[in-house]
Length: 291
Length: 239
Image 1 (cartoon, each protein chain N blue to C red):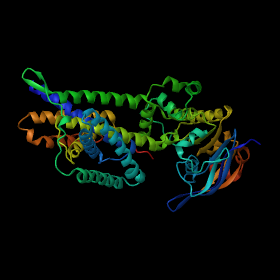
Image 2 (tube, rainbow over the protein chains, first blue to last red):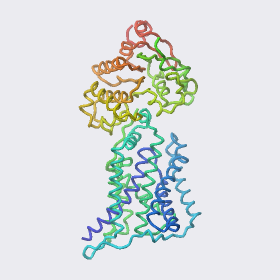
Image 3 (cartoon, chains in turn cyan, green):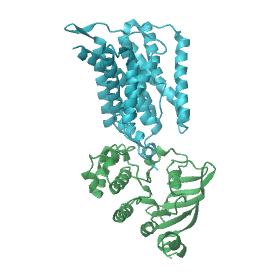
Image 4 (cartoon, each protein chain N blue to C red):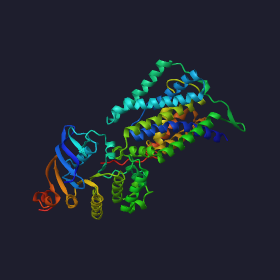
């Protein structure tokens, strides 16, 4: 039973990782860059929720405002920080992404100070009882949101015209251009979707533990990036599998007293093992070099 | 004389300091098959990429139906009726054959028109219909070339630009591909063809331009150039 509870908690934590990892992996697949500011978009969404709560009071408004704000933020970052570097060396893009990350954190600190905020109204307390065990409602909500996000995204990517255009751009940007696909617009849409997911992930984190600081997105961002790489960066199902897997490993490791203090080490060890066995990740495809 | 569909004027393209095209001019008239032949590195693919906007020229202009399209973004060229089938086919491997064809019609809005063209393509390429649910990456080289050509047809183009359609295919398939190119003309399309297989290309072309290290060194009717001694020596493997 204890194992089952740990598993459910793991699936829930993994769901949040998966939602963040989807943002990393879609941007990587389509824009061919690692958006290291992705975790800080989560943080920015968190502060937006905090501000909206103070002004309007209701969590639903807060979430909606955060989604809209993060979408705009994602589009602005892409337009002004990354688009001018299209065709530049990957290293220049990577350093810019790290710069954007640090800019967002510094801006948040200037605006809100470094003290941790407690937007308690976002918290969902209470638990579902099975015998003597508790499953927090926030865990169940996270699971439900994860399932919905994954289903909607999978349907969108595979069955909508824009979704198929995203696959085309991720596979071959020039060929996509020749089909008449406005690749810049597709990249913008990708950033918008990734950032909306970041806002949702931010809410899922804060509804469990309403503690908001400028580094809110830092560790989950790194974990989710790890998850995306484990699953195969660039692959949408890969991000889902990698996120869930990482969450379950994390939770199971926590539930074993001997391993609990080393949970982060266990997770990154899994990353190393996966990369040794299958460098392209679990569902990643080896890219054929085109000549 | 029929109208000029494509007109390239004094096109000059640089890769860094290397002058890949040294001011070339040529034209394609409606209903023609025009071939651009030349050795590796002569600038054939560069010419096509510049026409469809993947590369920007330093100087010179490209006119399509009298309209200057030199600075038109690549993704807006297709809806003008000019479609480019790139070298190496460049089909979308992880999409199904059917979805690849649909990508060809990306800019079209008329659902019934798209369906009509789809049926025409399936009539011309029955193998694509048999495999329409298969992932495109699982097709053979010849089938992939047919898919790339079928995908281009779905844009309902007037001018089809083909880059090395016979590359890497067996002799039997090469003949089949050239038959298809000929059928484009019979269907009223205009073709600009780049080929290393100069002999085959000339045999189906109306006119030919010879490209050598970024300059056009010879041009004329295919039926005349095919008997030209210097062409025979350099491109047709005959002494």
